[in-house]
Amino acid sequence: MASLASLAPLVLMAVSGALLYAKTSSEFFAAPADAGSLSSSVIRLANDLVHRGSGLVSKHISVGAGAYLALAGSLVLTVRGIRQLRRAA
Image (tube, rainbow, N blue to C red):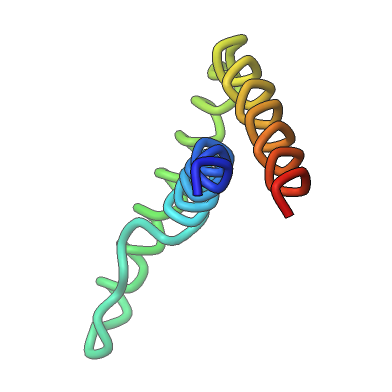
């Protein structure tokens, strides 16, 4: 059971990455079904502005060495856990 726990860091990083991608790639403002043409246009404009701003910010933010180190560490722990599982079986 302890060797299965070594998968937790990799699973946590994968889930966090998937959630981050899902939250940042979707629309920020949803138009109600009964929205008129003016309110739809305003909501579309707001979404366009937010996406342009997030694109600008994403150019200036990069994944740091800590994230790469955490990924490498979680991969090492996962490989060691799988090896222990195979030895025990």
